[in-house]
Amino acid sequence: MLKLRPYTCKIVLATSLVWFICGLMLMMYYTDCIGDNSVECQGFRNRNPNSISVKARKFFRVTAAPATTAVDDNFRYWSPVVVNSNPSHWPGEMGRAVVIPPEEEELRKEKFKLNQFNLLASDRIALNRTLPDVRAEGCKGKEYAPKLPSTSIVIVFHNEAWSTLLRTIHSVIRMSPKELIEEILLVDDASEKDYLGLPLEEYISKLPVPVKVLRTGKRSGLIRARLIGAAEARGQVITFLDAHCECTVGWLEPLLDRIGRQIAAFYSLRRGHRSARSSVSTTKRFDAYVEYWETQAEMNLPLVIVPQRGQDEHG
Ligand SMILES: *[C@@H]1O[C@H](CO)[C@@H](O)[C@H](O)[C@H]1NC(C)=O
Image 1 (cartoon, rainbow, N blue to C red):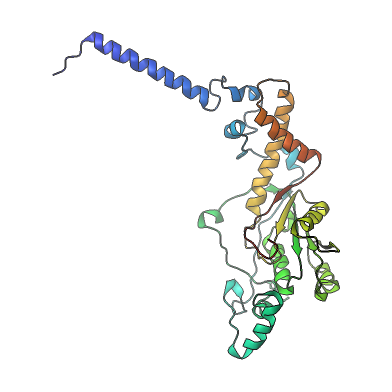
Image 2 (spheres, rainbow, N blue to C red; image 1 turned 180 degrees about the horizontal axis):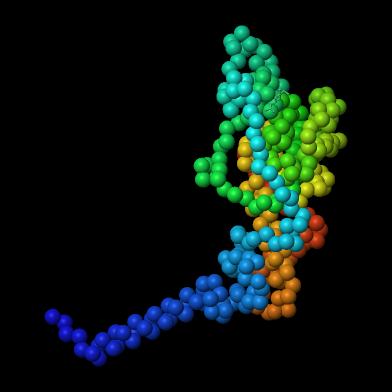
């Protein structure tokens, strides 16, 4: 059997202790500012520690900063959406397939040519039909800030079918907290269809939220058209949507909640940064980050989100 002499024990213990202390010091240096001696932290020492999360301070990725009052003032209280549905036997309710009987096959083919999709079926579905709640179970119970930024919804279209365009608009209105929709801006990229002229303007004038049609005059492409919409937007956040999509319940709140936190965090970062500006310890990355957001805020540019992915004829 191995015999441990007190002398050996002491050496083993002392070595372990040295390594333990080394490890501890390394940890303190690299983890979030425990020792106040890490390079990234020095500029932030005097700031309100609650104004922004430690992670965000270190990586400038703002994740969980509580909203500050400076920004909150412009945000709006909102109430959850109450979804009223049409009778379930109506065509396409809850996303049920619409079956075109064989005797109407010719008509279906005829209408298909107009927009390259089953327009006959689309026209039979109510403009205010309801789609199922597609959120994951874990998301349905999530709570969002009581005050959120308002948004302008920008929708660009070119010769869009009436029923798909109007269903997009109705779904935005029905599935979003009404307090948060500043306006819906439709940008017509030189459509040639008559129904997208005056009839559209008359229809939207009766809707319960402000809807405006902007016309590009000549074909200008998706991005230029979106910028025309963005230039007109008065909301705090611009949301770009396709002209043929349908929003479902809970689509908007998480987006605005995330962006609202970023706006709030940015303001608290800005305040922190102002006082720390002369300090040499502020890193280049942080400067770049703050400058970016300062430019955005000084030019009074709202943040931009494009929640939809995928491609269509616009690219
Ligand atoms: C949808 O629109 C139809 C026709 O305008 C109307 O009768 C119906 O009540 C509306 N349904 C809902 C849920 O708003």
